[in-house]
Length: 526
Image 1 (cartoon, rainbow, N blue to C red):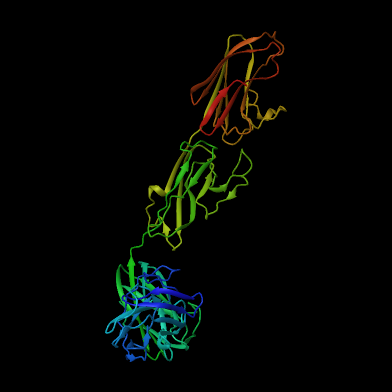
Image 2: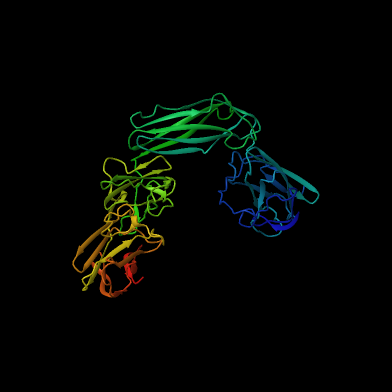
C-alpha cells in the first residue's frame, strides 16, 4: 500500500509504505483507523546512538527502538528524532515498516521537507495483539538510500514471566472464603519454569487467612499458550471486618526478574443476607380460592442474583392439609390432589386454602454467592405472608303464604343432569356429599324454607343451582306464589317473586349462584 501522508510536525514524507497487508494504519490522532485509540502516554525518546547517513545530512536517533514489556491491547509510543545536519534542505523522505503489524507510524501532519539544521520527530507506536515478542524494521529512504531502524516489543533474551493481572483485590464476607486467580504467561519466546509461590510476610491471622491453592510446582509456562493455561489460585478467608495488604512472591527462572511481586489486597465486609420479600394475590383470600405467591422482589444487597426460593407453611387452621405447590392439580374440587411440587428455582408458587382460618407462609431465599435470607432468629415482615381465608356464605330464603309442604334445595356445580340424591341439600339430606368445606344447613319454619351454603367454591364449571318443589303429592296442589331472597355474606344479592307450578312435584330451578375471582358471591335468575 502506498500513501501520500504527512507525519511529524515540520516534516513531509511523500511516500509511506507498509509491507504488511491489512496491518495497522494510524490516523491523525495517533490511533488505528479501524480501532479506537486508548490514549497512551508518550515515552521519552529511547536512548541509542545517532548515525549520519549519506543522504545529505540526515541523522536518525536512535536506530534501535525497544518498547519493552507492553500488555496485550495496551499502547506505548516512542519518538524517532530526524535531524538535518547538512547545509541544504532534505527532500521528502519515505517510511516503510517490515515485520510485525503491531508496530505503526503515528501520522500528525506537517510541512514538506526538512530545512538545514532543523530536526523533527516521528512517533512510532506499539500495540501488541497477542502474547509474545514482536520485531520489525522501519526503513527511512532518502533518494536511493535506505536507513534501517530496529523496532522491538516484548522482546527478551531468555525466559520471561508475565503475571496477569499485575495486582489482585479480593473481597469476602466475614466468616466466608473467596478465591482469586492470576494467569501466568511468557513475555518471550522461551518457556518459563515457576519454582515457588508464597506470600512475603505472614498475614494478620486475626484479620484474614491468605493461602495459595495452586498450581502444583514446579509449573512450566510455555510460549504461545492460551491465557489461563497456568493459573495461580489464591484463597482469602475473612475473619473480621477490615482490610489488609500482602505481597505474593512468584519465583521462576526469569533471567531479568527471578522474583515477580504481585500486590494482593483483601477486604472483609459484614455479611449482608439476601432480603426475602414475599407478595401474594388476590388481596382478599377466599377458602378454596387459589393464592399466587411471588418472591420476585427479593434481592441480595451485595449484588448477587437470587437463585432459589423456598416457601413453608408455618401456621394453619385445624384440619388443613394444603401445601405450597408449583401448579394445582386437575380436580377443581380438590386441586391439592395431583398438584405439581413447588420448583424452588422459580420465584412464584400457588397455595390453595382448604379450610377457613389464618395461614402463615414464610419465604426463604438463596443467592448465587451462597447467602441465605432471612438470617438470624427474627423473621422480617417482608418475608412473611399472613393469609386470612374467609368463607363466602350464601343464604337462600323462600317465603310463601300457602300452607303447603314446599321443599327448597341447592346443588353444587358438579351436579349433573342426572339426579343424584347424595348431592341434594334439603330436609331429607341435611349432610350432602358436597366438596370439603361446603356446609349445607337446612332450617324449616312455617311458610319459610332456608338453605345456607357456607363457603362457596369456585364455579368455573357451572353455578350452584337453587331448586324448589311441592313435597305432598296427596294434597290438592295449586300454584304457589313465593318470595325468593339470596343473601351473600348477609347482604341481599338477589330478590324475586316466583310461582311454583301446580304440577310442581319435580324440583324446578329458581336461581343460580356463582363464585369467581373478584366477585365471590353473586345470584341471578336461572
